[in-house]
Image (tube, rainbow, N blue to C red; front, side, top):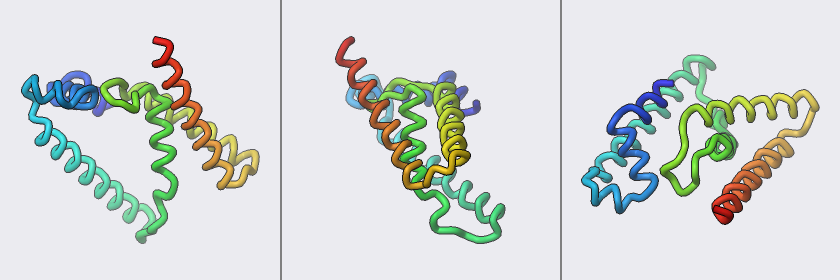
Length: 141
């Protein structure tokens, strides 16, 4: 919920949304796009490093495959949560609900003894369906 407050209630969060919606317009308004982008990448790298440290502390050793196929799941959760692929639209609450839905789906598939390869395929099919629905809904508007 800290992320939601930062994105919705601070000027920096509004800058991020403005940059995602239209970078050229954000530059014209006076937002330092390059500096804000560098800050976002630095924050992302710092959080990834912190996650690695927590993983090493929890498991007692480094595993090179710990995040395998998570990029597909994270992209699916973000798109399912209402974030536009073109940027500028979305929120943390919808993403949290989508993550819970995705975890519930994967847990159900594990309970049904579905092979992990098929689980990745089902998540990928869900991502394609969400993208198609987003595209069709934009076409009808």
